[in-house]
Structures are given as structure tokens and as C-alpha cells.
Amino acid sequence: MKQSPLAIYSRTSVDGTMVCLWLALLSIGLIMVASASVAFASATYDDSWYFFKRHIMFLLISALGAGVVLLLPSDTWRRFSVPLLIIAIVLLAAVLVPGVGKRVNGAQRWISFGLFAVQISEIAKFAVLMFFASYFAQRYPQGLSGWREFGKLISLLALVLLLLVLEPDFGSTVVIAATVIAVMFIAGLKLRYFFPLAIGAVAVMAAIAIMSPYRLKRLVTFMDPWADQFNAGYQLTQSLIAFGRGEWFGMGLGNSLQKLFYLPEAHTDFIFAIYAEEFGMLGGVVLLALFGALIMRILAVFRTCMSRANHFLAFAVFGVAVLFSLQVFINVGVASGLLPTKGLTLPFISYGGSSLIVSCALMAFVVRADIEMRAIPEKKISVTNPSRVRHTEQNTAEVSA
Image (cartoon, rainbow, N blue to C red; front, top):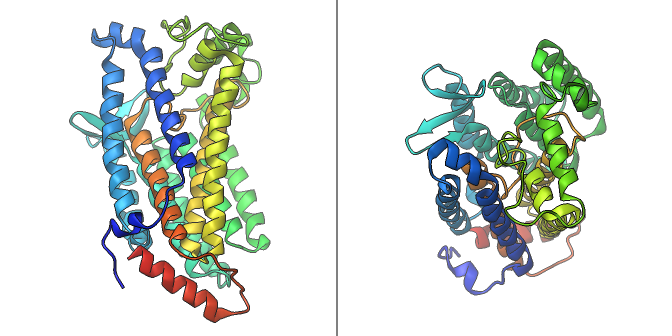
């Protein structure tokens, strides 16, 4: 029997720990955007709180978007996963059209809508994840029918990645590719498919690095940024100085010097360096622990979805955990000199409307999945008893309706 959108919330509980971790990260992000951007905003826009006020606006839009995702049955995203992917591909192509896409710092990744610009790669993350989760859920546990089907699937993924590379957005390319591969693995894709996939991925990344001189220079420079600290290594050396000044306990909130025009992108891609300077190593460990705890809660939802035999939700939620993990690892790795410099935001922390809105939408999707699964009585699912699996899937569909 179909239920009203709010009926499910009246008889189920929400994972309070997961929601509190989410809100804690959003709060830290709000504070850090204000702290890291104040000098740059004052000099550029004659308003010290320019980015802070815009970040609040993005938070309100994110709350609205998250509310919509929470009210929609999760099965909606499975049913519309193909149209979502088509829209994402069309937008990725449109952003490359001169006059349509907005170019910033040599990259054409945004489409302007008046007050703010939308970064299309963020929309692509959501759409690609929903499509591949739906695709493999329909074929679980049998898997793909053969190499021809695998080839078609990889060709579709390659199209998305090619459009991202052309922007260029190498960071999002790596994150989306790795997330899809992780979903394929957890969905039981046979290992024989992964070997050519891995070889192709390495070959393509090597070709991209070699054909793009500035990327190759980044790969070389991050190994020893001090050798060219006033040119190619400037951003990384300034980030490392911020880490060094923070020491164990930090300089205190608002007391960073590197945000005073020394470190470029201080409120976006390198906000973790400013955080480490103001709160020290211990503060950085606490922030990473919050991310770790949130990802563990998301993985707990994944396990619950698998136990209820809802494979679409399981694969999608697992993909969200992988996507957040990769973005945190890459962002922190870049800021600390562990990885080559590339533009990628720190989820919930960095300034950036598109990233914040999509990240909150993904978290709302996880919360909705958790609530729907809690509404189904827990049962031990046996793959040797198809009738019990069908019964559980029927209950899931009724809850989602």
C-alpha cells in the first residue's frame, strides 16, 4: 500500500549520530570559510564577509535540496537514473561550448545562472553514481552477460570522463572513475574485467599527464616543491608553511597568516591547510576523525541495505562512502604534499556552492536510505531462498512508494 511522503518518518528513527556528524562538518565549514576568506574578500569585493554570506546562501539551498531528497522515495532515483545521466552528459558537453561555459583560471567547468555558477562535474557525480548503482543492482548477483556488455558500459563511462578531461577537471575524473570501479567491485564484477580496466586507466592517465605540460610539471614539482618554490611549487610550499606554523595546537581561530594573500585558493581547495595552521595537528586529526566516523556510519547503512536485499540502495550508499573518502584523501593529500596539486574541494568544508549542494544531496540520500531500511523488519536473507528475497524486496518497494 502506498504511503504519504511523510508517513515513513512517523514510525522510524533517524541515525542521530550520522546526522550530528554531518551537521558538525557543515558548522566547521561555515566557520572556516569565514576565517579563510576574510582578507581576500575584503581586498577583492570590499566586503570581508562576501564569501561567508554566499556560503550561508549555499547552505540554505543545500538544506532545501536535501529536504527534497529526503521526501522523495529512494526508488525515484533508480527509475530516473538514465534520464539523469543523459542530462549530466548534455550539460558536460554544453559547458565546453564557447559562450555557454564559464572559464575560470584556464578551466571551463561552470555554467553561469546569474547570482552563481554551477559546476557541472558535481552534478555528474550524482548522476553517474545513481546510474551505475541501478545498472548493477538489476544484474545482481548474475553480473554482466559478457565482454560486449562490459564494453558498452565502459564506453559510456569513458564518454563522461572524456568530457571532464576536456574541461579540464582531472580531480573529478579520478574521483568518478574510482567510485564507479569500487561500485563494480562491490557488485561482484568478475576480476577478469578489472585487469584491462586497470591497464587502460593507467595508460590514459599517463597519456593525459604527458600531453599536458602543466600536469606533468605538477607531477614532478610535488616531489620537491622547494626546488621551484616561487613558481610551480609556490602553492604547495605555502601550504606546507601553513602546516608548519600550526604545530600541535595551532595559532588560534582567525590567526592564520597564510590566508593573507600568501596561499592561493585558501578558502576553497587549500582550506585544510588554513585549518591546520589555526587548529594545529590535533585539530586536523579531530577533523579527519569526524570524516572517518561519518564514512563508517554510511558504510553501516550500506550493510543494512545489503541485509535487506535492496541492492540499488546498497551500491549507491557504498558509492557515496567511496566518493567522500576519495575527496577527503585527495584534498588533504594535495594540501600536505602527499599528492600532486589538483583542484578538488573538501566535502562540507570548502567554499563552493555546487560541491556543497551535491554533497548534502548525497548525504540526504543516505539518510533516506537508512530510514527506509529501518522501516523493514530485519531478517536473515538467504540467497538459496528466493521467496524470502522477493518478500523483502516487496517490503522495500512499499516503504519507498
